[in-house]
Length: 370
Picture 1 (cartoon, helix red, strand yellow):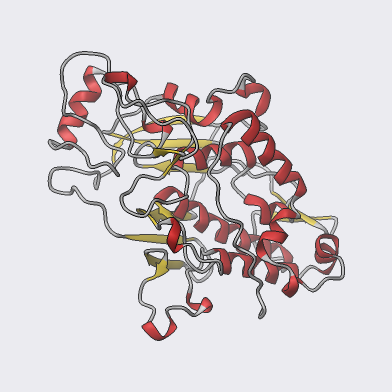
Picture 2 (cartoon, rainbow, N blue to C red):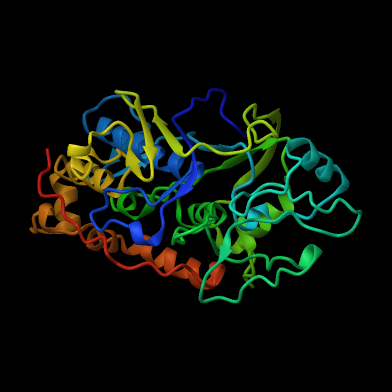
């Protein structure tokens, strides 16, 4: 049951990713700028500030337990809204006569390869599916691309749509599924939390293709032999709103913006615009300055994490021992979240079966922690 009051705590827009050749080992460039990922990273900023507030006895959604770790207060639930189905497996939806009419309303042109919108090239009444521009992993069997419903293989991990230099970022269907199985907090925050944080309710916009059955396949079950009811720590609910997002793609508005927007409900009301993984408005002189990276970049989020550790001596010693946090690389710190890593390894083996192969290059340290 939803709580009686609610508030927006994070918002993201965007539909771009950088290619594998543009990855930064310093963590200062955002790899994935799709709206769902942007919103989740803004949410992490919101969580960090609330944990900091709990330390200082300010108003917070967290409480400190035994001077050691933090836990959510009772009766707090998180809701995720997206104006359309996430790219990847959740967008491979069986076509119906009704959804074909919706597709015709939204666009009269065949969608480009990078878009997860309707393919209306063939409107004959036969079995077919809505297609996705997200791509199978290079080391996996590729889509047959046969006619009708045999165009895609379903329940598979995919990388984000796009042309040119291929991205290593998996589709939003895969990332949301990971949040459902391993928590939205990620490995770093899991080090200082008593429990995983799960999104309880997922709401998707109207006026675009939607299938709850497809959501269950893409986000909860895939090809796993173990039923999701026996695997998941918390089973989410899916809904479709009756409201149509006013800026959905139409004949007039066909191309998505090149930039992304992130907003989070923090004391200073975080608001930034990203272009190609970098913060818009930074001068050329400071373009490569780590301090000028986006607040939701790996570099800035790790810095927030270390700043938080420095305010809780007992917690810091439990995680890092006597080693100065300035000497611990980002990727090494993430590996310290043993419970999270075990959950993630099991999820990959049982649920995803396969995953994108990324180079382990994020071994940067934060030398200056204020």
